[in-house]
Image (tube, rainbow, N blue to C red; front, top):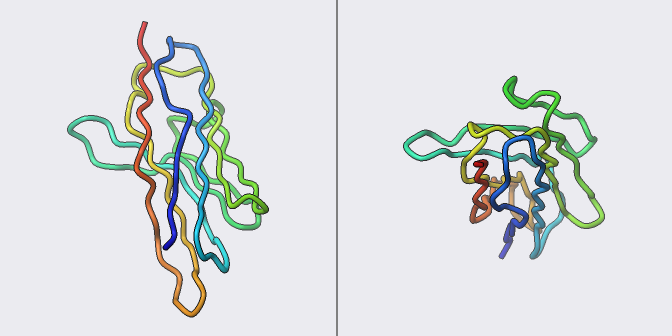
Amino acid sequence: QVQLVESGGGLVQPGGSLRLSCTASGRISFINTMAWYQQAPGRQRTLVASITSGGSTNYVDSVQGRFTISRDNNKNAVYLQMNSLKPEDTAVYYCNADIKAPFTTSRYYWGQGTQVTVSS
């Protein structure tokens, strides 16, 4: 059974920083793209940033220059460094990964989500 476990959320003042972490565990053959999504109250879940197995990154315009996604393939982990946080960044952040387990085709997995609140 593959699991994604996130950590690092919390309450931070505007202009502050947080670092989210997500680690995949279980029977894993290979992890393709890993990503972070956000879901604010009453809104749809949307992509924030993604990173391929080779390290190519993609960001939504609203976080470009403020957030940095990275991964450690040896640890099956992905990170999101969030700087210059704004109140509109407040949301539950979900980790997502395209994972191939042994003897199966790859599929997407989701973490349980971690709350990020930006408020003074």
